[in-house]
Length: 431
Image (cartoon, rainbow, N blue to C red; front, side):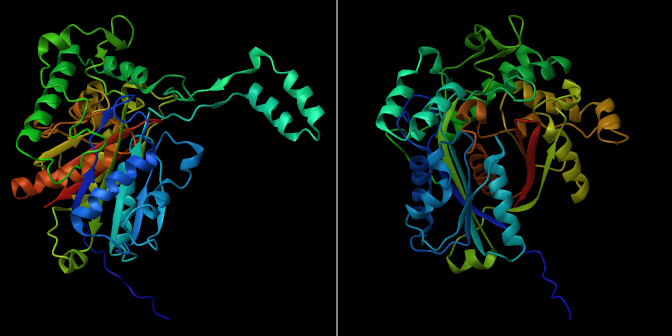
């Protein structure tokens, strides 16, 4: 029996929609992941006329999830105007969650398993999953298991103030005990990343985002939500002097990382619509760009050298693999979208790509990977200005990058998204 051979199909990025990102405990204080994701989906559905459409699949995810969010994406789909026979699933890979949902949907389209799909994600740090610690949890289990009211009363009477321990989620890595910011402080120091260079990157992020708003770049990428019509973290009045006055927040009193050159806790949601050319043509939708390839990577952030295998350095390796597979160099791109988890992380990655020792010892290359034209980097603002809702950042980056390629009339873009626990995903878009 002969197995049929199917060709890999082009994957078009048709557009996206997100709600404005809000600082934690601000405009979206009372909004749930499902409500935010539902709002982002609703805007996408309305913009592209997807009501009652049986989309091939919807993949989404969130990093900070309550127990009620165990089927977050499916519940958001059922609550939307999409046909309820649209399947959905959740994916999670920390800060690269949204990027991985795009790759998942794209792979299914490329293999002919679906003709259309939506990648999405949401996160709220305003609604964290605060649980019970072992003392209180064990006591409550005993109370619940009591076989009589008298037995239950005796168990309740045994409660002590010290039993009320809470399990509050935090950013620290379980294996190292360090939050990503402290881990990145070690990496940045090892690469000699300066405070001035980080502040310069942060300033460019805010200025580029403001300019993008001013020319209407986000008009077909965003819908207002709960009274917010722009990213709440954007600071139009920021300047070098204001940034220079801020105290370090990571790396100790002599650290170089501040609240301005590090992303703030953020709430938000985003979506991306992907499909085949035929599906798009049937609906009169012109693709913005095509997803050419993607690559994931991980590093040993636990026992590795913080310089070369810092917690956020995985994309430095993933990009090298991706370029080699596609016969490209770092200079073969018109746009670069590097997730600004911290300005220090972006600058450490750029330093590694340009370092002969890193190229030789870590990437196995005779020459450094190369340099990036900074005028092509995060041209419409990055995470330092927009904020960073963990599960939503990937959708913002992919949809915005595709739109940026369409706006300039063509070209090729490199996307790089780092994630906690030493992971990351990178991709190539082309128009």
